[in-house]
Amino acid sequence: MDWISTPALLAIAGFAGGMVLGLAARLGRFCTLGAIEDAVLLGDRRRLRAWGLAIAVAILAAHFADLAGIIELENAIYLSSAVNVPAAVLGGLLFGLGMAFAGTCGFGALARIGGGDLKALVMVGVMAVSAYAAMNGITAVARSRLIEPLSFDIGRPQSIAGLASEAIPGLPAPLVAVAIAALILWWCLRNPDFRSNQRLILAGLAVGGAVSFGWLATGIIGTDPFEPQRLESYTFARPLGDSLIYLMTFTGSTIRFGIGATFGVVAGSLAAAIVQRRIRWEACDDPRELRRQMLGAFLMGTGGVLALGCTIGQGISAASVLAVSAPIVLASIYFGAWAGITWLVGGAPVALSQAPFLRIFRRPTQAGE
Image (cartoon, rainbow, N blue to C red):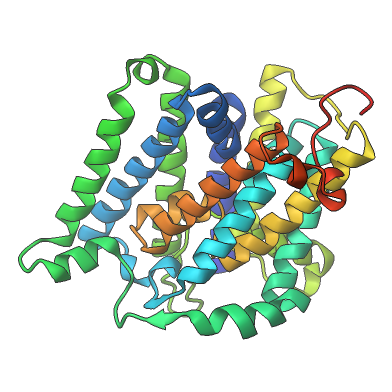
């Protein structure tokens, strides 16, 4: 289309898929921290299974599209030949801990904004600034000097399916992808409580479909020979910083897929909140809560850039292309969130929980504490 630029067209596509994600977050209660809290505190893994369903759907769709020649997965941003395990672990831990402190992730905060949550608006602002600082600002100096040199080149795209195929001659990479997706699906659907929960199943299918759509959109539209774009899907770490800069420097910035996705999630959540009639203005209960959430947002923004993705970026988008980094970051996020949740509910050692600096970020156990 000559009347619209490729980046703008990708932003529209990102907005459309982002709306689906926003609807799934609010209508389907698709939330990473909520899923982890249910598993850690209640032993309920149904929402984790919805997450697994989204990953399995995205794996199958992405690899079938690659097999059909519609997209070339080896060009995906998560499948570079450079592997940085320390960055993946540290970034994931910081993101998970920040998620526990903030009470949600970047994606969840965007979804909450659509329902009128002013706390989420503050969190998104802090996360956007910290993410951009980690990319191009003051914390980027430490990242580039201390973390980036720890990466190593494996000489080929870091695809688990591709590496398995290379290690076992004659084993097709697509077959590895299908086997992994089938194993995840078996784990999800073997639970009768999950199978009977239509809302969670629909949410998982919607999120997996949206991530798949992201790969297709950037893989098809982004092949414009005059304005080639990178192959990517949904993530909400760096795009928050890009969105903030775009809002502030509109005439000097180029809109991107991730910027459209960011606003799409808010729009989708707003639409769902209107349908549910659940738009309510909310603010922090006290300064302690605000401090804790701002710290969590800072950790998520910084950790998300270090890990090259968030719970959606690494957790589903990178997992869908079977990037080596995905399970490392996912495990680190889970452990960081588990540690944060455990500490916030009083499970940390007394000496640690009473540390003057950390004590101000703990959730009050009683009104007025």
